[in-house]
Amino acid sequence: MIGHRMPECADLIESVEKKLQDLFNTKSRVLISSSSGTGLQEAAVRNCSDIRVLNCVNGAFSNRWRKVTDANGKLNSVLEVEWGQPIKPEDVLQCLKEDDFDAVTVVHNETSTGVISPIEEISSAVRSEHGDEIQILVDSVSGVGGARLDFDGWELDVVLTSSQKALALPPGLSFCAVSDGAMEKASTVANRGAYFDFIELDRYLQRNQTPATPAISLIFALDRQLDHMAAEGLESRLSRHLSLRDKTISWAAARGFSLFAAADYESPTVTCLRNDRKIEVDRLNDFLRARGFIVSNGYGVLRDKTLRIAHMGETSESDLDQLFEAVDAFLDMPNGS
Image 1 (cartoon, rainbow, N blue to C red):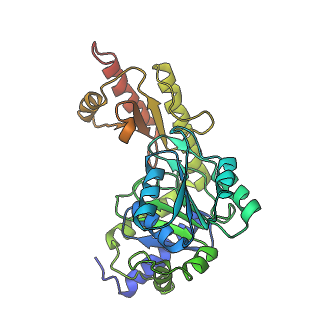
Image 2: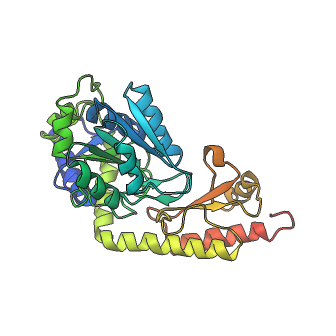
């Protein structure tokens, strides 16, 4: 362990900052927070809106961002679509006509439903109609590192992610790329808070520091993992995730499971299956735990109605083969389904 004001820590943060910029495809700053992604959801709405936020909701985590917006006293309107469906550009534009907005929140990869939304198209539509007047705020907690994202090319303002999903690190860190436009907006917003103040975080980052003590041990792990990801190559990593997704979908279809996600919007990192076979998911997991595996039950209102299989981070085809073999063994039992 090293002290967070020691030069060795500054060197460490400088190292990871350059690698994070490559990961996010940006020349802008990437802020580091010792929090979950929810903390940076709060940061985004506190720093980037003082008029009205359009919260785009198509699952549990996009709905959490709506709740965070409410909890911070920000005026907001909600675009809600059926869970399992993506957020679409035309719907966003229609909602933006209904009031004065300065920010839009949208989840890139909705972990609760296995749906990926077309962020590039959404951003292009918003920029075409509204220029830089509206801040485009993106939660990519289960996207970055596993699904394609181009912060600069897509002209986004804030993209946040967490350490424990496609980056395959322990939980406890989150990161957000922040555009110059978002920083300019933040400089005009009162009551940005203390812990998540973009201006203060950026001021310290210029010295390769954080305002408060960061999770240094996790940043060491981040530095190592970003090197590992770079060695694999981003394009290879993205292709691997797509291959794992397709393998999972093929296996599921052969076992009589249908997808919860709308066609053409299936997540590269997590597949959400309808529980067509009426499996007791908790009983399935009791069986799988004894063999070193687990799948996720449906989230919130989708509990027992769906099950989710993650195929992100360092997951390999061999990992999935072993998981599928174990699930097949359960399904073949007299009371397996």
